[in-house]
Image 1 (cartoon, rainbow, N blue to C red):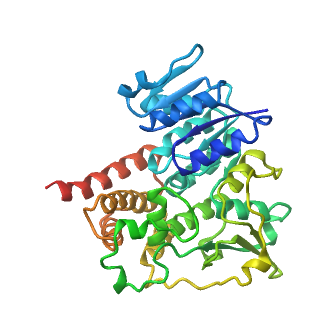
Image 2: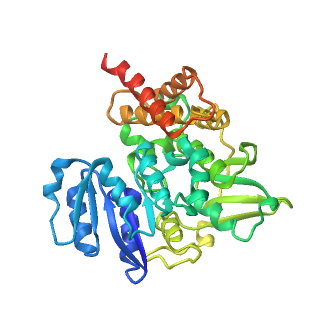
Amino acid sequence: MKNVSIIGTSGSIGTQTIDVLLNNRDKYQLVAFAVGANVDYANEVLQQFPEVEVVSVANEQDIPKIKARDGLSVLHGDAGLEQVCTLASVDVVVTAIVGFVGLRPTVSAIKAGKDIALANKETLVTAGHIIMPLAREYGVSILPVDSEHSAIYQVLQGIEAEDLSKLIITASGGSFRNKTRAELEDVTVSDALNHPNWSMGAKITIDSATMFNKGLEVIEAHHLYDVSYDDIEVVIHYESIIHSMIETKDYSVLAQLGTPDMRLPISYALSFPNHDPIANSERLNLTKIGKLHFIEPDLERYPALKLAIDAGRTGGSMPTVMNAANEVAVDLFLNGKIKFLDIETIVETAMNNHQLIANPTLEQIFAVDSQVRSSILGGFND
């Protein structure tokens, strides 16, 4: 029996993690979790998992809305996230929370000796040079939940590091993969949120449409697998059947395939090294699919991908700048304050204006993130 905690429980990855746990009650206990403002969902989860010891909400005023019971601690804010991630009974923390906010609780969980089922890209994007050595220092595993990194993690089992030639990360191309740059001028939020293959949260779906998401994954892969940026390739694969590949020194290519279902990588991160059955999952039928398509991404069509990879290659504090600017810009777009293509412009401007810190500490990363956000939002509040 493995004791699990989740931060970001009411989001896309969080709810699918709950589904995995519910269908494997003989293997997992949910002992702590955190939500934002979705108190109704929190109460639903508490009813399904009577073993929960700690629940955290974002805002203090929502605490009375949680249905109290003996033995349950109800917390809020940063302190609540910290407790959910460091509770003594927890074995593995699923970091399903979206955004830079996931960094600090992940660090706390690592220092508390908890294994990390990592769905929070921003943790490695902004602080991979700190997180991976920290995980080694505290003897914890970083188990990737992103479908692409889970695929790579799976096919790397049994492969020696010296035999690896490159990583091949697949991308769907997002909601606008069939549109030209000119056609993107006036796309709407609802257009951008209409992903062709995956059901994801709003922020990640927009990142998929710009391809910033794939750039973030390249940076993640660099840190997770200690692979040079020169040895990481991105390929647009329309069907999202091959979730990623590796190439070995003899030019063999090994791939992980499956239907687009995020419960598979979630389950693998929790059950590693085993492959548990996924309830109500669709078996892959290649003869029914018939054909798979692969296209090299055009960096003029997808400048966000180039910006993100350039930030990763520059290193230091630049990925933090890129990530913070993108988070703010996506939020502005979702709230109707900017156009879709303005997202890239805002990120590029922030990167161009930044004075690089070559090897930032955690506190410097937090300071840079705050400064970038304030600078961008200040221009919209004037």
